[in-house]
Each structure stands twice: as C-alpha cells, then as structure tokens.
Amino acid sequence: MNSIDNFNFNSKKALVRVDFNVPLDKETLEITDDKRIRAALPTIQKILSDNGSAIIMSHLGRPKNGSEDKFSLRHVKKRIEELSGARVHFSNDCIGEDAAVLSDKLLPGEILLLENVRFHAEETKGDIPFAKKLADLGDCYVNDAFGTAHRAHSSTCHIAQFFPNAKMCGLLMEKEIQSAKSVMENTKRPFTAIVGGAKVSDKVLIVENLIDKADHIIIGGGMAYTFKKALGGDIGNSLCEDERLATCIEILKRAKEKGVSIHLPEDSVIADDFNNNANTKTTESNQIKEGWMGLDIGCNAAKDFSDVISKSKTILWNGPMGVFEMSSFEKGTKSIAIAVAQATENGAYSLIGGGDSAAAAKKFGVDQVVSHVSTGGGALLEYFEGKTLPGIQAIEA
Image: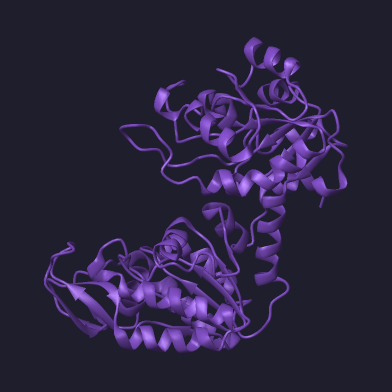
C-alpha cells in the first residue's frame, strides 16, 4: 500500500479526499461533532509540515438539486482553521475558474477547502471527465476517506488514475485498514463478533462471512427476533423479517457445521409501545406475547454475552443490542460497551464499527478505551462482507 510516510510533499499541492460529512445543527448550521475533522488532522498536518499545501475535497450530506446552503462545506471552514492552525481558503465550487485560481495562488502551509463535491451529479456517477477536472488542481492524490471507500465516485476512486506515481492512502485510511486486518487476518483467538441492529437483511452478508472467521457470534438488537421466530419462538410484536426465516436457519446450520457458537439473547426487556415511557417487563425472548415487543436484551442475556466477551482476544462490535437512544432500553448496549472496554484493558483487540455502535461507545464513555472506533460504517461493513473497496483498490492499482 502506498503511504504518505514515504512521500515528500515539499512544494506539492496535495489533493486530499477526506470525509468531513459532519453533523450540523439544523438551526445554526454549526458543527455538533467534529471527530471526523480531528481524525483527518494527522494526514493534513503531515502534508503541511513537509512544506506542502492541502486541497481538501469532501461531501456533506446528500444534496439532491445541486448547491444547497445547508450542505455547504463553508460551514466547516472555521473549525478546520481552529484545529489545524493553518490559513484556510474556500472555493465556492470544487471545479472551475474559482477553484483553479485559488489553487494556483495556494502557498505551502496553507489549505484550500473545495465546495461539496456532491453539488455536481457527476461525482456520484463516477464521471471520469469530472475526476480529471478535480485532478488538474493538484500535484498528487491522498485518499483519507475510509468512510466513502466503498463508493466508486469520482473523488474517491476514479481521480487516482491521473496520479499513477503519486497516489496514496492517508494516515487515517491506513489505520482503518490495519484495524480491519487485525480482526480478519491477524486474528488472536477466541474471536468474538457482536452483531446487532434492526434487520437480518442489513447484516446477513457480514454474519455469513464471519462464520468462516469467528469463534463466537453474538446476535442482538431487532434482528435477534427473526432468529427466535425461525427457531419456533413467540416474539409478539417484535421486529421480524419473515422472508429471512429460512436464512436464519441456514446461518445457524452453517455455524454449527463450522463449530462457531451463535449466541442469541435468552431474555429481553419488552414494552407495550415503541416509547421510552411505555410499560416494560422482562421475559424470555421466545415467549413474548402479542401486543409486546422486544426493545433490549435482558439481564441474563447481558451476563451471558459479557462472559463470552471477557474470554475473547479479538472483538468486533457492529450494531447495538437494543434501542439504546431511549434510557429505558439502553442497559443491554451499555453492558456490552463496558464488557468490550474491560476485555480491551485485559489485552484484547477491539474494533467498533458503524454509526450506531460508535455513538453507543461515546455515550457510555468507552470510545477512548477500546482499540479503535472506525469512522466508516458502510465501508467497514462491506470490508467484513468480503467485498473489494473501490477507494482502496484505486490506490493499490
């Protein structure tokens, strides 16, 4: 893999694709969480310290009709200046005369922030001429946007071909790839994968791929009830994908054949409404009556899962155990977060991936304790599904 550690950026204008798709307050349009900007700082600072300049490309949100102020990257310019300590210029477009003039005038040690690349429909279409226009602004290309590495877009993939001898991964991208490989390739055993979330269909590929890698697979969240129903249990009004019942049986069968232990929640916290103030009680997960739904794992399940995690040397966590955003249904996910943190402190390698899992790790104060919290939800999922990520492939080609 081409690394920026092996490249001298002296007097070079580096086109850097980052993932600054940060959350903004709907009213003030101010940044509410700047972790994605902070994560890219080491790469940007490396370029500037080499006496180079950085031309930053990113998307923000999902604009549908060209330029929209609520998706403008100008809202993040001030924060980049504060965190980097560098002078930051802003181009009102990512291509065209304004961008070209500002790029020409850019001095070593300075940053040029380009406007949202997704204001052009060509970006998501992977348009080659559009990629060439972006490429013309710089001397080399750095991809540090792991969160979009699974997209074959112009700025994340196709632009790389215009820098055959000057394309590389940024420090964040390298860290993400190394973390994923620590789980899937340099695995210390026992390896436990914790998979949660609402739907089996969202996670079926990752679970199927993990059967060939993991020793234990813990399944929680709404998807657990499809498994429970597939096994003949009563799940009341809990989430269920009836079209995936056969898939669940096949997964359980394959896991048994491979000697992989699948752990489903013995008990659940159930409610009579999807509401934080609903009536609640705890019952066995396969004995939920009509009118009630499972919204969290119960105490017995939390203990069983935590025991498995405590004995693990490699841990992958993707997906919550329940509706942790509601205080009435957060205990299960919190118990998993604590168990993962404790296992990490005892020497395990832990990788947390996916927006919800990362949010849970932060909420329960373990994001600084675990080995790595990934910035890429969809990209990490596809990596663990065994898919090739276009953004990484373009660098390695």
